[in-house]
Image (cartoon, rainbow, N blue to C red):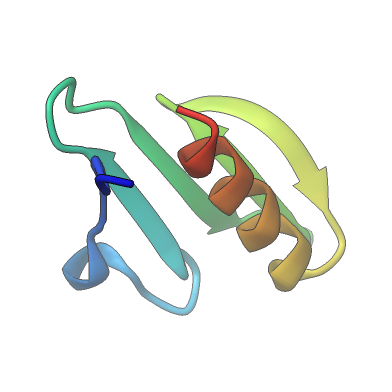
Length: 68
């Protein structure tokens, strides 16, 4: 399997613990902390889902990345 999504660690912080970028299309998937303490998973700045735990949001982001 060729990894076409690259994790962009230099853009990761406590409030944004994961960011991936598609090497060809430039699409992004990222996990961000919402102001009420929950965690959001975004694809191309579109909210996909909101989770209570950071780990759940990261898992959903991983699924988005691995499905394309």
